[in-house]
Length: 334
Image (cartoon, rainbow, N blue to C red; front, side):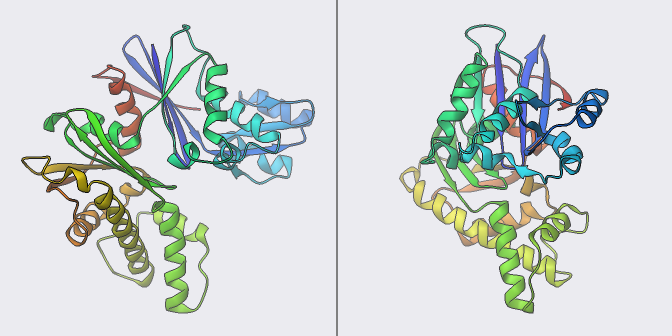
């Protein structure tokens, strides 16, 4: 039996197959830690919300943290920070609480956990990735890392024989994978993701108007229905479009250099399959297609496609990686 774990910057997903049904748990990647009291604990139990209680602190993760942080006189913080920095001690509790909300203990001694995580964790000098693997092993799993780009191709590349370029355009990073017949030949990760786009948008706005724009305002606006990247109706839309173009140009430049040895590998153009939170913005497909004209890869790209249900693409690809296909998805929020 296999469980898949897709750890992004803003949300985590765990997928497990049980009797040919795919169970998905999602966790908003935020936490809050504060002093516990009986009234807060009673409210958590009444609402059947998960929590971790230590000798002196109450640890909450996900939507529960958002809901109860004001009662603890705390603000929510990103779980990514608790993974990237092993200290202080409460970060260890946060990691355990997050995994506890997503995963049950392994059902068998040989159960594998296929894992996608930001590459920055694996290369971190703080040992962030090693700490994460240790926690997974304490749940009884054998962790096995793979890439988001490969998972995307496995999830949506069946029509091309699982030969394509997979692009994960997430909040914390962008990752490209060159995949040939289901086997990853090369991978390139870089920092030009959604968070960089937000910071770049703020910088361009300041240069244009001489005033600061809050990152939170940019992110709320991006999630609204008013955003179309391929349209330039007002200054903020134009600024956001330019920021996304800058990010894609830089990311494609790095990918083109990394994939230069594969020039001439494919006899026909290959599809580019994209997924990730930022790809949900209307007009992203057109913006990406234009970016490929400015900064082409060393081999011909045919169609550019945003995969169906991109928020689940990586998780589904991980399960296909494990040899399980034709899944019936039954989402469950944690």
